Length: 75
Image 1 (cartoon, helix red, strand yellow):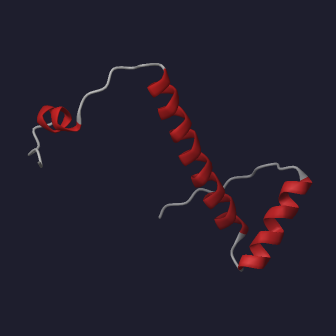
Image 2 (cartoon, one colour; image 1 turned 180 degrees about the vertical axis):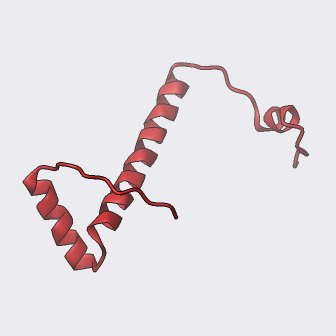
């Protein structure tokens, strides 16, 4: 996996929490932060999908999508 070094500023209380969890889980702080961000982005994706659903954006069936993409339709 490619990585990028970041220099960020966090509230002291948040840094303390990350440090505590890293020690407890025996993981690097960067792993804790990356995992938290992955979960947060999954949450945002879900909220975005719910918003689109509530906004009544047009949808197509899975079979129509497969046909449109030239894929075999599984019945």
